[in-house]
Amino acid sequence: MLIIILVMAAILVMCGLVLTYVAFPHRGADVPTAPWLGKGMAKAVDALPTLDAEEDEQPRAAGSPLDQRAPR
Image 1: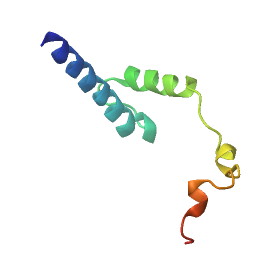
Image 2: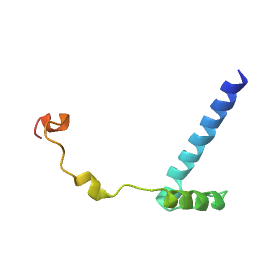
Image 3: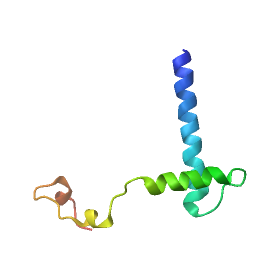
């Protein structure tokens, strides 16, 4: 039972951090009560690897299920 409570607490903390990031640093604003938290989150996101937009433009393999979609 204790493990379930600890895991749920960790999940809630992670959700709070994601919500805080989306509400403030992602939009370019400072976190009102903890500007150090927003700066730390921004540094962490900048350090993470990201996908380039060019990778999305790669042609799909023939016979891919995505090729069989109805035209728009």
